[in-house]
Amino acid sequence: MEIRALIEKYKNEIVEKTQEIIRIRSVEGTPAEGKPFGEGPYKALEYAVNLSKEMGFKVEEFDGYAAHAEIGQGDELVGILVHLDVVPEGEGWEYDPYGGEVHDGKIYGRGAVDDKGPAIAVMYAMKILQDLGVDFNRRIRIIFGTNEESGWGCMNHYLSKVKPPTMAFTPDADFPVINGEKGIMVFDLRYPLKEDGEVKLIDLKGGSAPNMVPDTASVTLELEDIDSLMERAKSYNGEDKIEINVEGKTIQIRAKGKSAHGSTPERGENAISNLMAFLGEVLKAGSLKEFARLYNESIGFYHNGEGIGCGFEDEISGKLNFNAGMIKYEDGYITLTINIRYPITSSAKEVYAGMREKLKDTDMVIVEGSDQKPLYVPEDNFLVTKLMDVYRSVTGDYDSKPIVIGGGTYARAMENAVAFGPVFPGQEDVVHQKNEYIAIDHLMMLTEIYTKALYELSR
Ligand SMILES: [Zn+2]
Image (tube, rainbow, N blue to C red):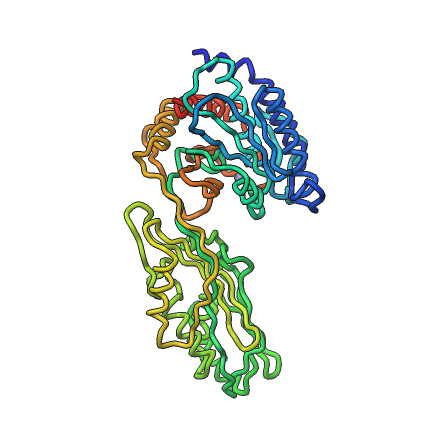
């Protein structure tokens, strides 16, 4: 078992290098000459470049945005996409978030598992293959990005300079293999609010990001007959989600909900939907009541677009996910910002067409926005089968199957790419949390899996 012996030989180095790169606070900062994402991400990139050179890899740099390092021969190319930037540390850490301290067999620090530890594991996997002197039929290239957490500017620049690899994986999500990601749309629905005397809308707001289920929403209204509204409010069930404040002729209504990620709206409870359900009950008439009615009928508490003409699904990726992430009132319009994850066999065009048909006799207008196309590499594809084989043989987990998700991973930056680790099924999720860590045993197992995976993919 030559590979195991080499991993054991490099164990201390792998731990040390992971600690060292964690000590670089590579949060996006102020851009400077040659440092498009600020000092931190640049320093981390410089570290990886220097280590690659020490290891004898062929290195190329791309203006401080990204770099790659290569071994092997062959026309075709296997890419491994890693990122060296991190999200800010946040509060409440038990250890220094940039200390790289080891406690209880775990290396602590921001970026330990997302994505610096896995990046070091892949670099040593390449070094081990080089040490073994294996013959390659495909070259192996690790690609270092520096802006995964905040905009992917690194990959836009990189791919404007270099042809993408023939196939790629990113160790920046979950095991076993994520071979499909739904399409992601963000767009607005706009509704012109008419002035109609009885109720005056002063303010309406809810949510803070399209891809989050909002946990609060509020409306401020001015109206003459507050008493009869309060009377109707009494018979509304679901009061615990609604809080009302009256001051003269002004009434403020706050709705509560439960936050969740926009790719899994069914795990949360939408505060905008709670607010609209309430308004639909207690308002007597008028343009705002009409909006609430339309909202409740077409969006309401549906999570899969079935009320608004886009309830698509397919066998591989399941149902469309629909999240009403934000609402506001401005210049006479109510604007809803919607985040949709559509199945891989569907398209933004189909989603818009379905909604347009459903909304055609209403005042609601669709304002088209962004569309990230779905990603799918079939289960019987060379890349997926090889990675699954390696994962199974190293872990003994023969039950897990390739997965399709609604979220977006770094794999989306390229075609014919999948996510492969680093988090195992059922493992504690510490990504973007306080006390982020990677266990040393975990890091060693990653090195083994990635060494064997790169060997198989280079055949
Ligand atoms: Zn990441």
